Length: 381
Image 1 (spheres, rainbow, N blue to C red):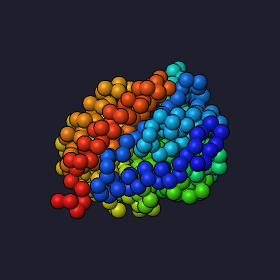
Image 2 (cartoon, helix red, strand yellow; image 1 turned 135 degrees about the vertical axis):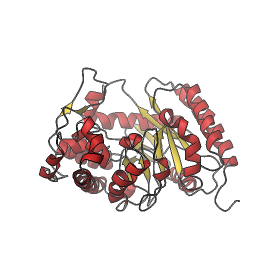
Image 3 (cartoon, rainbow, N blue to C red; image 1 turned 180 degrees about the vertical axis):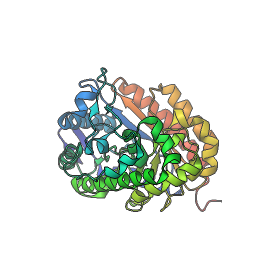
Image 4 (cartoon, rainbow, N blue to C red; image 1 turned 90 degrees about the vertical axis):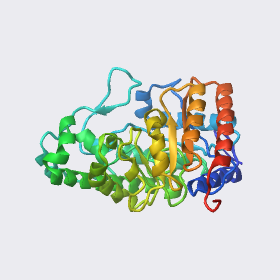
């Protein structure tokens, strides 16, 4: 068993068994239970603002969280560390200033939206992904995480969003949604640039991590993705897009990333007016990462759109209680089985006791076993 100061023994063979369950579930092959996802964030010693500013503190907190989940969860948990300086890395690469509110637990954003006229996009040029904005911090600490953590601890990629999410940081809000109509060519010019910059950043992150396989995926999701399925793009803006606008302005620029890192997942917290288009990227995607709270109403449509070919990661990330999480996953299983496999992703914080975490795991495990028995797996009718 591999050990590091602060992390108990990691059984490499057992972690590989857990990864194989994920591979099988993604491929719609029979498993004993649907995989369960757990992520632990600890703000008992540092505020979010203090953590965002310090790779050292983030490494410390990740080590404690990994050790605790390995100790508490008898199965499913694939250890992963997450480096997170905020949502707006690409914006900082173009010189946009980070804004912090008065609450040190509120995530940072950009101080202002610099694009107020669409003609301004033609003056932008691609920054150096090794030296611009927050990227040096991300690369330095990704490399250090890779050196100091055991090889069976994967690393989540940086939270870079997606081309449309970058546009949200640059464009004044009204302009963002009128650009589709007022000057679509200028808007597409910006999205091409944003996608190219994002892809350049991912290449540097993969190099810093040592290999693509060390990453859970290329972006923020701490849940491990199978080999050859490491692509990931956040596209929360598409919560307000029609299927037609998604197909014209979102999917082509997401494809720029998914062609290089094939397959994987799209993230949109929800709602999902364009969900019928999600999996039909080039190459096709493998699933959706979303928030249960904002996706619940779309579960019947997800069942039709993802039938037998896409997994759904349902994040319980809005402060739900244990009872609400268990009940939510039961409702999702009832809505999606036997057509669509869903994985619950529970975002915990330091206020959860050991007993409460264990009890929630057991409750979800029971649902996941029943769910697996009800699923229509490939080759089984």
